[in-house]
Length: 147
Image 1: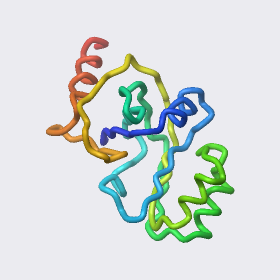
Image 2 (image 1 turned 180 degrees about the vertical axis):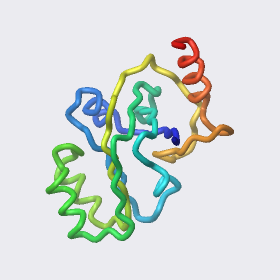
Image 3 (image 1 turned 90 degrees about the vertical axis):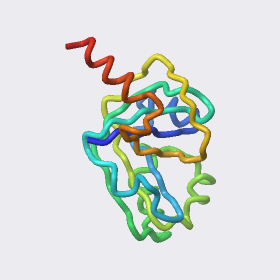
Image 4 (image 1 turned 60 degrees about the horizontal axis):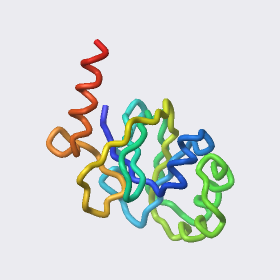
């Protein structure tokens, strides 16, 4: 199981927390470090851009698109648009993307806000034992208290 830090614009994080947004999409102009490394059962730490980590979720399912075309993106929008969110204008900006993935979110839970020291522009970070912004240590301590 992998752990991930997922950076979202605040309106999208709010929609996830309200249950209106149930799929997170990452459509990019090239494969990112997270491509192929997200799988069902993985844990997500959800962070508002410029804000704290304020929720967790579990990956219920994931679907990869290694060679996206405009017709495929239109199909994704038609099939999953309501669960993903985003205006027509936002979708139009995504039409030139060449790969991506969709993540079905499960077990979404708000948590006490955790500020982390993240200065780079990555919007999705696969966490490791060496680089986890203190999130994995906090999680294991929380689990230990419950056992």
